[in-house]
Amino acid sequence: MKTAAIHSRIDPGTKEKAETILHRLGVSPTEAIRMFYTQITLRNGLPFPVEIPNEETKRALEDSRTGRNLERFESVDDLLESWKE
Image (cartoon, rainbow, N blue to C red):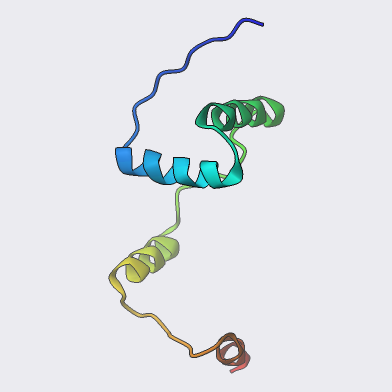
């Protein structure tokens, strides 16, 4: 079977983190790329949603990055109880 090469540049930190996860999964980077491309062709698009976040989501993401406006809970039960109020 003939094969085609893909050449790509990626941030070294991202590459290292991803390859650590792939290694734990027992998947080589080449196999992961092959799976990704196969899913693109099977789904006729990306195998995950890609969307531009709305303003509320942008604010929430920024708040989480900066630690602003966050609620903290001692347990999951406390979190669930807060939803009842």
